[in-house]
Length: 472
Ligand code: SF4
Image 1 (cartoon, helix red, strand yellow):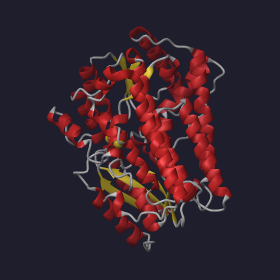
Image 2 (tube, protein in one colour):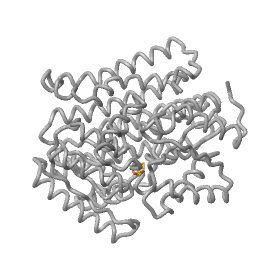
Image 3 (tube, helix red, strand yellow):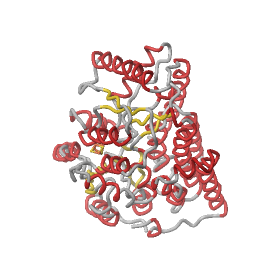
Image 4 (cartoon, helix red, strand yellow):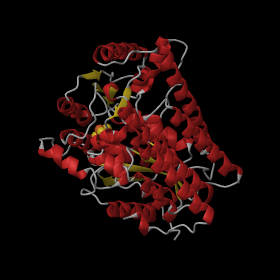
């Protein structure tokens, strides 16, 4: 299943110009790395993942292929900013190589930025590159398995370990990780620590975290981490700088909440990648950056424009869905196809959905307290490691909030935490009469289930359970 298997939009000259404009911007946001000089370029372009990411402007094709008008423009804009956000991460590690801190995806980067460090989220490689080239992670999964990693470990940490074993990580002053999101994720940092030869700090996140005692404890963990980073890196905490980062995060979140409020309407004035992928990169990988705020603000602006025109994002919205579990990295076109084939609007996903507080920036302690709450309630981990109520309560709240018609569960075979919940999941959806589609696949490995087979499963669900007539 490839994008070219879909029906191409009948694009006007204006639509084509939109594509060209954002393609140039995307290429520009990666080309700016050239400013670091030929020596640096030779060093970083040894990394296969970076060479593959250099073709990321192809992701724009996905955003525009089947779409026209304002929705096409908004989707292309969101994708160009996603590519720009990844470019920012690489740019900052090139600019300050002695300040690089490799951090786990469940440890957001605000504190590192407040300390003048250059954060680089280890898993961003395994998340972003398969979006550009579906089978890319397989070589690295094999490297990790050949080194002795159990094959049934999740393919995301396996890919991250494989990249480290293959010597494709930037040099780092330190590594920061936590006891989340799962055993595979935690175990991968023993390999990173060994291969990168960097000191590693592990944050201890309490199992039950919805109480003051847990937050007090975790604030003390964050203080311990700051002291450790001051000892092992050139970074020093600057509370005013952290305040600026937190204010940026608050602004972006304000826009995000407004977008969510607007897309409650039927038909939804925004959907697809402008919701899930933009939020994944800007609110999970690079929160608190000016680009994140700008992106959220501009997506909101475009959402309002579509609404003012009296319609929805999709030409015909027939169904509204949430994607639970991490998104289908090897088949990001899934919802582009579902949109065109059945009028399915994807309005939310698990990784970007949260109920975090705004950060109280009145004092260093209040900032740490809010950040502690945000980290312990991190996406994926909050939902997948238990108690099970964390998984179901958020999901069913979301189902009501967005007046959804069905739940799509990306049943990633390597995620044992969520696979263990599938029986209960079916039961609870049956009790509530919610149509539930559990798609079998692997997050980063197309050899387990191919995109064609994923599409077939979705077709069978839509036509037998939803009784949907294809639009084409
Ligand atoms: S998808 Fe599941 S198994 Fe994989 S890293 Fe996330 S929580 Fe762990």
